Length: 306
Image 1 (cartoon, rainbow, N blue to C red):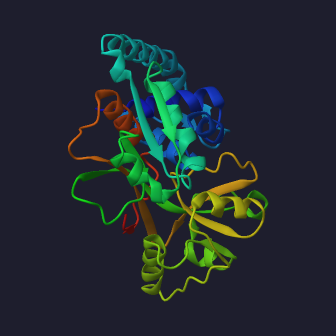
Image 2 (tube, rainbow, N blue to C red):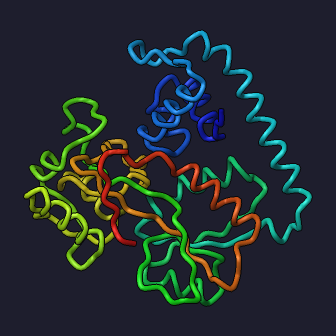
């Protein structure tokens, strides 16, 4: 029986906040990700922890588990701080870069990882234009980059950080009821804000929808997710972004996974093959993988090329 730290954190957050929505905001996760983490925890222990018909009221088992799990998390945090204090202090600082288009919707979640998992780590973060990410890495300004990459030189190493299911982002007032998912047919019936042609994600969306006799005809074409979401927030239509791109900075927006079919977008970590990540950077990357997990649906999935 294995439980992840993130499952325990999600359980505590829902208990304390009283809802998945408030817990998701506290953890810098999507509501669906928190729901998945709690459901996996419930399945692993074979106990229902919340009454979903009664405003997420914790069950008797949940109330009994809560103080014990909070003690466990507190002990883990103390253990992590003590372990870090024994390391070389130079190794407790690292630099990384995130694409400017991703930064507004991704950095809050990544900074939460830094603050919760390794408070003593000092991190310098850059948010350059996407075309400058690789240059910053090769010039030694950063230890790794986070973004979407293709056609890489052999001296660079790439690993998957997260798999994000494509989601529809639109004004909350346009959502008639809380939905766990939305179909592509419903999305295409609205003015769509999507990446322009020539970008791999757009190609995958079009090719996939063609197999379902559907056609993507965007009302607006924008290359950066941050701009897509900004347009949606101002009422210009429905933005299509990966689920790991948080829209929490816009209280008027909702983000709902798109199904029929599910299409995913890989978020990658890029580093230099000749320079393995420092222990602190590696700890951060692994913690970020856990924090960003649980966003993709298990229906038929089509993965967009990096």
